Image (tube, rainbow, N blue to C red; front, side, top):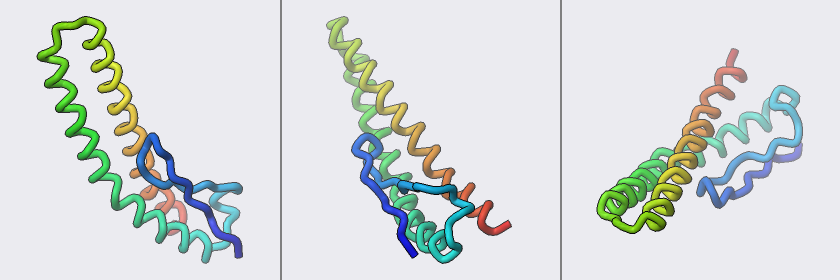
Length: 105
């Protein structure tokens, strides 16, 4: 039985599974092992999101106080990028729930 590799995604700050085949085609034992590993990673996602939200709050405060237009644009862009990361993290977080539903039905 081969294993599913998890690769660190520097943008998201978490390791994500690298599937080379459809989930349904995997051996049930490998699915179970992968889900266990994913649950460990998935458990860290809320804290990662919280950390990013704190960064956004700080950047928003900086933006509020910023008078330089170019710097304001940079701050706004950074806020948007962090918000995008949070959105992607929530998608990955919910992925675990979807996989469980598929494997237990």
